[in-house]
Amino acid sequence: MATTNALIRGQGGIPETIRYIIDLPLNERGRAPKIKRQPFIIFARNLTTANGDVQLAARDAQIDWTPARDQRVRSLVREIVARNAAPAITGVGSAFHVPGTIIGEGETQIFLETKSGNPVSITILSREGQKKVWAVSLSEIVDEAARAPVRNSLLWYRLACFLPKSLPEEALAGDSASNANQARRDYDLVIQDLGNCPRTRSPEYRIG
Image 1: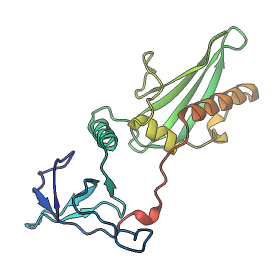
Image 2 (image 1 turned 180 degrees about the horizontal axis):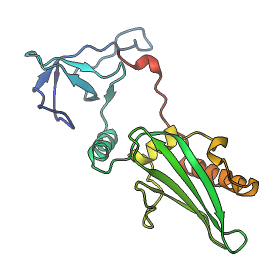
Image 3 (image 1 turned 30 degrees about the vertical axis):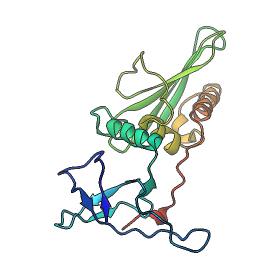
């Protein structure tokens, strides 16, 4: 049995008291961990029973509550339900580099494939005497006001965790060797700036 303090997101509300089953690993002493009166964040499905039964979305869907985790979950939920939410990335569609009129200048554009089919593109700009900058656009037209995603945002997660570590060769079909090499270097810059994805969950944690 658990007492709910707040519902971050859900349809139909949730009872004040809920029930769910969780299989927790034993602690270092070989005993069941003490969780009574401890605050948690859970991700679960409402089973709409009279007893307030819910089913955890995964075996590790109960996490210790902290103010930072609470804020992050709420922030991500707001982004997920937004009309312009960043779509799930499934791969790189195409990429090309256009040199500028001055040596060292140019622009690389990378078009991504998404689960929803919504457009996502990355633009990397090189200007003489300036640090390279890159930005992400979520529309058909490249937005001049676009910026690189903020770390731990939904868009950052989509890119950092699901982009391939190197630019696929098939994405560069038709580009010259020199332009393709520059596109690869610019893509590597994006991957480096995004940093490592902290997503370490294994498939065995899934339910069903």
